[in-house]
Image (cartoon, each protein chain N blue to C red):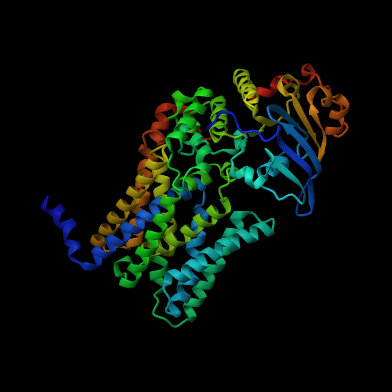
Length: 290
Length: 264
């Protein structure tokens, strides 16, 4: 018992650990909530694209001494708009357009970072640096998180309707175009916030895995949101502790815990888990497409 | 009244005048005109690509006509949409049935347009939803996840949403696709009730037997409205030949009935 207590309390004597835990809890709430929409809308690839595309924005913002969130937001929304534009103007399929746009932006970011003299550490952008997060970065993350949470909570019902049945949403006079880009803007902002914790490469896990995990556990949207947030927060906290004691990559640990939680639910979820399905119809589970 | 008698503006529900719609220069509908009165069930008949879904989109205000005008209940489209006068009942295939919403929540979505920004239901909205669910016999199943309903129940849930919306015009896209005979009968009974309440239903269908059995009006479309009006006078072999590009079909229920129609 005492060992467990020491194990839990000792890291809290370090200020950087407390800050890391608080920041990633907040970020997890935002990403957990947003990931429900991403899962239901099928926007995982879009999340990946946006999080990679913000890279040049972050580099330019640091070089010009602007808040990194501003640069990231401009490039995040810019990439989304560009994807939409190219898709509309050509016959190229959406996933192809997404693939080519985000790698282009990411390449621009890499090139910039190698040429622009600045104090930015590439590995911090790629893999996050939540243990060494600065006060100004914390402030930005808090502001972004509050903004995204407010928008998602206030427009909750409209966004659900937009994901479920956009045609009906439009026919009763909701502005689906506005909702579409609003959700993508929130995605850009959440990606920026998540970037602080796990970095560009793994932020898509924050934006997808908690929602997917929760989706296996319930058929109610409200419960899905709470379960998603819970799993996101739990993963972040457990991941940070784990990385502290193992001296391993924080981002890696956080996302690993998320993935383990998902696997657990994939196997054991009461109705949509593998075992439950097998119990219900032993033959159907052997042929999942049947 | 949430879902009682819809208000009447004259007797004309749908008025389309010289409508032209094109997509990037490709003509989808050209110079189409039609007028439908309150309290009618109208079949929309045409080949694939004849412009049926374009006409539906135009009636919902989703496409900008390149010429012509549309009025619903005597109001321009924008105002009609604000009054939530037009409800669209989608094809079953176009909905994600695994979505985590229950039946009651789906029907409540019909009310969103009139609620405040947070979409918190008022007692009035709850009543409208209950009334709508009662009418389609789904009140006992209101807590079910939408995908846990049978095919026929899903159709009724979306009809309930259109009812809760208080729509006076209902656009139904292939409502009988994949529906068994019993559900079909139930739905037709509901449609006839809606007609008695003064609503106007426009039903796109490939099943010509339906047209003569319960649709009092018919619109024949092939890039334009070829003919519209009373089924008895419009639904002739000559007009059908025009509609289906020279293919001669018998406009009798017996000949048009397809026994394989209920295949899943």
